[in-house]
Image (tube, rainbow, N blue to C red; front, side):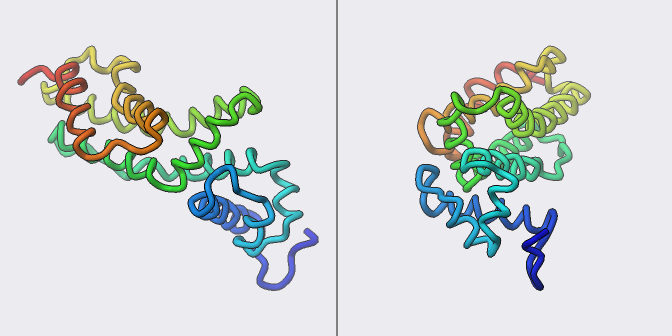
Length: 197
């Protein structure tokens, strides 16, 4: 590489530094004002190293969002407290949406028309699948304990809570607050999945 000067990061280290810089820049100036030059300066990387990997701002932000999406899933095991577990995970998602990652997703949504379908589907999968796995794990634990209906394991039911959080986030331009999480759980999710036992 032409940019392998002493102290200059390479490979994954450089890429992760660029992603972190892109998300930090995003948080500071907003999606519309992100410039590749500013991200390169923040990451202490050459501008050419950005353009070599990503041809434009949209691709860079999408890549940063994919990178961040891998960090969305907490190391989570159900505690047996169905509602408490759901609250914990839903608040975690809301906190992610309040971060630069959330701003990246909003920017990505705004440029969907110019985004190749395969990239769109990949990003959606990278974001949604870890969340779905956590909710599925909680529901499966509840089924085993007799507190969740077996039919709640249907994929659309498992994805209901995160989908509602995402819908609110995208339409209101802010994450659901704690009271909103309680409302979604108590008026929609719990009545749908709970055995009442």
